[in-house]
Length: 217
Image (cartoon, rainbow, N blue to C red; front, side):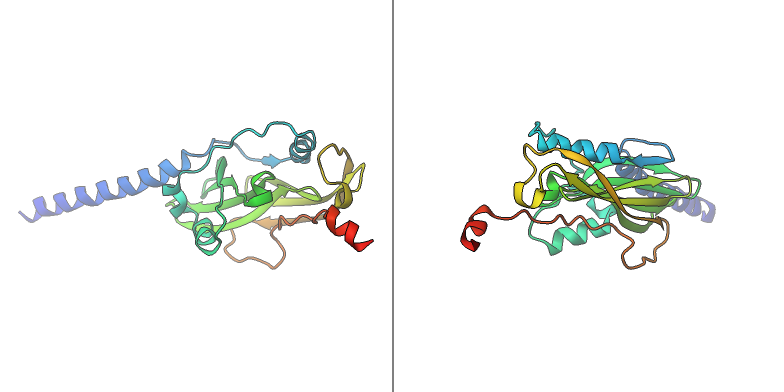
């Protein structure tokens, strides 16, 4: 009798574990699979700006379904703390012998149009490890990222050199002369400990308001 009871308990435990794993695997399946090393390149990010400057149509992004927010604690917290909605867009799913990682774009206001890339790492049991902002683009700066086989991320930041000053002329109809390197750093995405300043902050300089400029004269 005891053996039968133990067998029934074992079956229920196994089924519960499979259901939990299926839920996490379902989350991972929301992201296109990619291989390491993986790059968010300068050319790709500059291309996003140039499309915006040319006023090209913006393709509607696929959003992560809200039921999967629970796997991204920082996203869930951010959604609770800020009235403006977030727009998580699944970008890539990565895997190493010891970890899973997903890359997704988030946005509010300007960043809904200009990408902000985050990486979230899990252990193989699906437990959350850490989230970092590693790359993105806005009208005055961009950060490119390369992720190696150990989930170490090299972040290269640039300022954007426009043919007409962005602060006074804005982006539409403008053109990029080039990118000016500013900083380079490497962060370990699998570390739960963050160093101040290691993440990229997507904060563009604001263009001048023409009405304010007239009043100031």
